[in-house]
Amino acid sequence: MSVAAELNPRARYAGWVAPLCWIAVALEGFDLVVLGAVLPSLLKYDDWGLTPNSASVISVVGLVGVMIGALAAGTISDLIGRRQAMLWTVVSFSVLTLACAFAPNPTVFAVLRFLAGLGLGGVLPTALALINEYASLGRGGRATTTMMTGYHVGAVLTALLGILVIGSYGWQWMFVIGSLPALVLVPLMIKYLPESNAYLLARAGLAPTAEQPERRPARSKNPVGMLFQHGLGRSTLAFWVASFMGLLLVYGLNTWLPEIMRAAGYELGAALALLLVLNVGAVLGLVVAGQVADRIGTRRSAIAWFAAAAIFLALLSVKIPGVGVYISVLLAGMFVFSAQVLVYAYVAHVYPAAARGTALGSAAGVGRLGAITGPLITGVLLTAGLAYPWGFYLFAAVAALGAVGILLVDRNPAPAEPLPQTEDDAEHITHTHPSH
Image: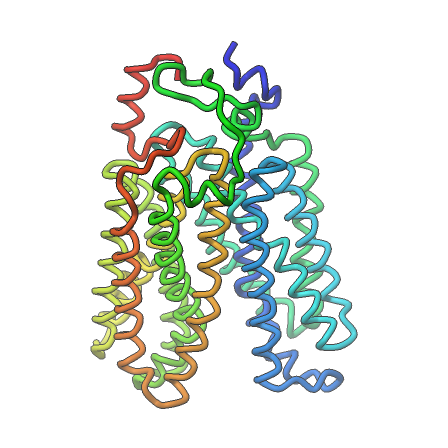
């Protein structure tokens, strides 16, 4: 029996990791859309007297909570384990989301959104660590992108739910419904979600090596400090740059694409349809990106995806008649959203298990600064009447900087046990060391 099996009696539930993490990530997709769905009703809610400016403050406060949660939860998962971290993040987010439905005033609502964000921010880095550590060798890219389809499915379902629920029952029910998945998800996690073998080995002081894949004693280290040791410092900063740029694109486009397209002369209905097409492209891109990453490596894929995103975003500055604009937006969506997910996949394959959660959390947390910056910068361009075409030029430049960030990642860091990046890497490891 392997050391991992001895340490992890729940390993027989490995098949549950992917679906449970997918559902958890779909909850973050819910959060991406829910505030935008309820804001029109909140602005008309006379008891609160919200203005667009105060509503923007509430939005930013929630994103700050998510950012802090992401930065903290990755390290917490390296200290207490992926399983416990995932349970606590889902429980806290769901309870506080339910509380939002009963907020008596905008101040309490904003505080609850911030606190819910702390829990929600921990979902993604913890799920990413788990999904990569349980993925079949050499298929981490595919596992990551498949899981992230949950993010966009959750966003689309929440938008549809808003259409059905808010007008008939009120905005509060959106937050009640958003908390309900926890009633099923948490019991399933308690019963079926296993701890990561890689985490258990690291905690037990057993770091894999080529000669003895599960047996070499490992020194206990501060997971935060490890981000800047063993030649990883440059890579950590480079990943932060790439993640900042990636989430700036995701949130900037999701927030303002309809208004930019209206500024370009498109009708409102067409502009909203283009937002839907953008997110359909995101799901298609994720399916393709994972397979490509497992064949040629996450590094090459991430660079290619950012570069392609830059090209197609720049092309959107040209007004294309008819169906051509929908094809252009679809292609932009395929590369923009997948590029950010490939950043996460690459992070998971570079850092050792003892610091993997921290690395993912820091990338997601710093990226949240981009998520805040994107809508703000684009809003300024819209106010100045420059969003079209300069908004697309800006987005193209941001995507190019994302590619540069990945290029700056050290190709040869020296972590204790990197995950294989491609199926060929995994096949080589398996043939050389059959005990894997």
